Length: 633
Image 1 (tube, rainbow, N blue to C red):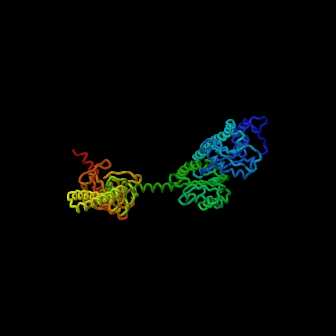
Image 2 (tube, rainbow, N blue to C red):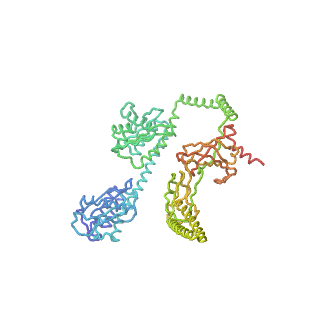
Image 3 (tube, rainbow, N blue to C red):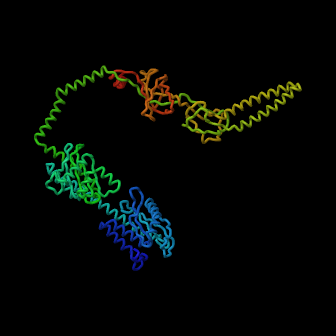
């Protein structure tokens, strides 16, 4: 690029005429040119049309980050290109996410020798998800005029050629997948023309080598715990003692033991290669001795029965696109065909033996020995149904409620000063629940005390002067002030509310109401103890006749379904209640909660132990009750 001539598009003798560039790119796309060649031509065209200092194409990796797949730096050094990498990456990411052209400012390169104004990073999304590149970035000068509508339209037109290439390649890959799948079905169809399993294996091995462009294809049969090599592509006869057949048999035995496909790729490196060797040592040895780059072994099954193993070796570093899926589809059809051929190949003696065993099973399953066993089992079951005893349990939904609740209300008209707790917080003895503003009370109290002191002086004066009527009036005022002072003192004492028992704050989130006025008697907080809870059990009407006080039971909660807590019924409500749309009777049990793991409101399922009853009655009780109600008139 650095030695090429750059002129404005449309100028006489320009090196990058737009029309010629588009025609050249179109021919490359239609001719299925290599992705690298198309990308290089697009990038060179973008750099030339924009007179860019640096150009790059970016592709999104599996992790979501963009990385450059191709760069051209005609007017800057490699160090400058690396310094711009972060800003170019940011612009490319923004362009891919938004789908529109993005710009970012760039620092001046040290080697810049020509003036031309500030440099910017121009990011153009390619809008082709299947393309080898998703974005192009150009380092251009603001004074070059590239940011005008006409120049940007030309750049977008060139960038759109990657979309044409992506669409073309996508259709080609679809046709290639169709051809591969057709070849696989042709392979399966050709196998069905033969009746012997070994003939099928030879046909499948040779056909699969051509269909999947493999270096070698091996078919092996699995009978019980033994694996044998049945056919190798290009080989009419096999020597079971040869080293290669032993390697192939060991690899196929490894696949049979694994019970799933094994893909071995020599191109892997580092920890992935080490893990692959550890997981598939026989495939590793086969690849080393045979020189294969990729080995793919697939178990062949009929339902859950393992019939054989199909091993394909490739010279390329990875499987052709879509080959693994096509091989798996073909393997799903080959397994049942091979198994059917093996069944048909059984010699007469083996067929007779299999038929005899099936006949014996049929006879003993239908005739007297089996019938006697069935009758004996039926009689035992009937005896158990008539005389057997079974635990009779009653179940119902349950919920934990507090044993009692303490409601704290406003003692007088005042405002909230402190409210440190919120619903769900645990409360300790003596902890502050609530405090009220007592400034006005303290002021009134001081005024009342001062008035009472003044009245007491008047009383002393009236008593000394023997003005008994005035003394009586002063005495009445002093008594009224004393009552007022006592009331104010009680209010002052109630300005700080502390917990007098440990528990849980159920209701009253006042953290946002600091300074809010409240009226006398207004309910503010609700606290319940945690050391004991009441278990309320909903009992269906058809079961209430079997419930008695003192019955033992156990329950589990949705919060801790793995823990079972025993209880004993202590109370039974006399009237039914409507819960969850059904009329039920409510029974209560006091449940200790010393560690506080249970909380009010937790729901669960309870089971009452009503003794042991007849097995048939326990199993059919609900059905019989339903029939009695429906058939009674």
